[in-house]
Amino acid sequence: MEAQRITIAFVDQSSGYEATPQRVKLSSLASFASDVETFLRGDTKEIDPTQLDVAIREGSVAIETAPILAAPTLFDDLKALLHSELLDKIDPKRRSVLERWQKTARSARDISFRISAPFLGSAVVVSVDSDFHANDADQWVQVERYVRGEIQDLGGATKANAHIRLPDGTLLRVSTDKEVLQSEKVNRLYKMAMLRIRAQYNVLTRELRDARLMEFVEYAPSLDEDELSRLTKRGAQAWKDVPDATAWVDELRGGGD
Image 1: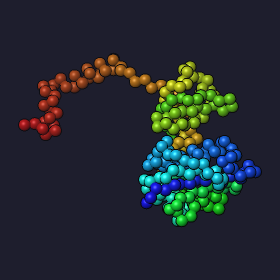
Image 2: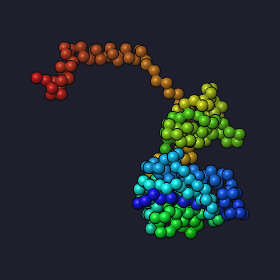
Image 3: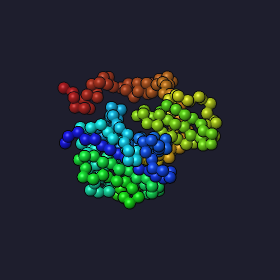
Image 4: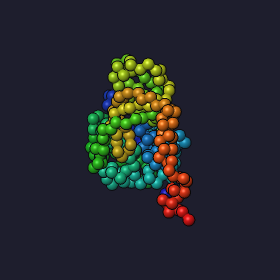
């Protein structure tokens, strides 16, 4: 297949006027651009958005990529979306974007999304009339886990929360009680920290949502000299009647002469 330009459009008339490149709400544009980046990159990351040039087109606000040559998973997913609204076999990251767009289109009837490309017979349209979904869509489970990352923001005027930059570069927003932050005696801002959180975990996309901070966990491994000495003495006592420990182990393994 020859190189393809992918055009993804955001159609929005919910504010009483049609969103265009000349006039669009900043929050809507930022959210749409982030979704487009996630959709193109996918879980396989066969496209690097940092190296991809785009153009902003009319209709209403459309992002058109430069020609893309090698993205077989993306092309296959787009073809599949033309023939079925089931998302089970679609790339997990793209599926999460489509589910989010479908939810938005249903809650705001004046918003829709269109994906088009020369190799597609028609555009893929996500609107109030479409029903893009997965049979196993409800894959969120409650988990409690430890996460490690850099504290980017901490506090909040009305709601207490923290923004954590995880090792993979993603930003995780974690809510908490003000008492948890008030009890902290350590300045954790812009420092690495270990946190115990409760959250919803998607077993397909491995995403976390609705995260809540339970506590900061101190992680400073150190050597306990007394414990090491005690274990060494126990080992010496246990092996005192064995003349050659190495030969004894080799014999057990069948490695003796």
